[in-house]
Length: 81
Image (tube, rainbow, N blue to C red; front, side):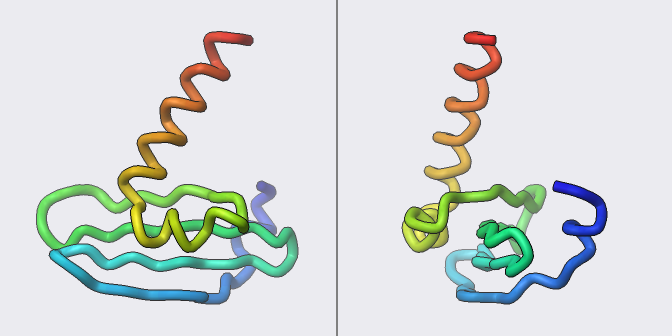
């Protein structure tokens, strides 16, 4: 992602608040990217991850699961390189 892309506005496709979590599903038109952003209202750090469009709603509904799966995939990719 270039700096220009990171400054482009993203459109909020979905938003929810539940059990101390604020979750957003965001889309950027310029590169057709989709991201999930999680903001815990209690202790914990906010985080964001990109997701394939066909998995966007599941990632929005289960952000911690998808974040963990992404981390596992990234670790395996680094080991294989």
